Image (tube, rainbow, N blue to C red; front, side, top):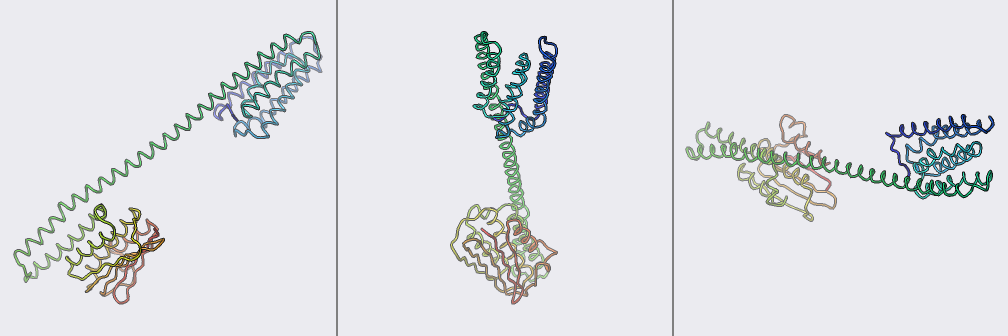
Length: 379
């Protein structure tokens, strides 16, 4: 364990260290039987410990750096502690400030060794001064060592548990955030599906009914106004279907991407009266949903553009799978356009380009001998 004091509570430890140091220094000043030089030496050692903590120890505790530097700081504290006791034995009370430092700076095993050494120092110094009183000193040292180790281990375990709880709380917060995100996405998807269903059941069905009723009245559409009404209704029907497809990739729910594109081409031929062919090359494989949706919608919008703008006689659609990409090509033999900017007033090609950008794809348009729209997506 490299630290038992978290940075936000470090000031509490600073206050505790200062109180112990000042109290012991005051006791050294007031105790009788020692020369001014010895008192000064003990106080100087305590001051050096305070400076060492402020300059080096505090930063190491904050960084939780249980490295060689931390061990050097602990040994320096131990040496200064020994100097203070050698000068004035009452400085032994510094033990209350020294022992916690070990547990805050170095791993548990090293801290225990340092605690034992710190408790042996007063015994050795007392043995030098009064060999006869060594027995009671050994008892006191044993009790102090046991208490210091037990308290240090207990505090260390508490801090480890606190850190584990903090980690679990952080993971729980991340899980809750992820759950909220997924719930939001699910809600958005459900609303999009609801809107798609509403459009399909109202606008699309309404346009279909209009076309049916007009054709029932004038099957050959000899009345030019009725013919125009049918064309307009068909165009809006196609737009509503494109909007439904944009809101919900329902076509992909019941079929593979190649099959969904074939259905779109067949529907296009049925509605526009333009021959269409679909060819699939390469090894067909399952793609990410986002990529399949972009490809399907691109095919839908490309066919819509052909019907509305190209005045074409035929359309070919190619879906090519390669090792690291998939490419969609829609080619017609109509009047052609030069680039996407010619369609900037609508939602077809600009919409395709925007969707392609979202999945890292590239959209290109060739306008010679008709129009070729090519969409390539890494996948």
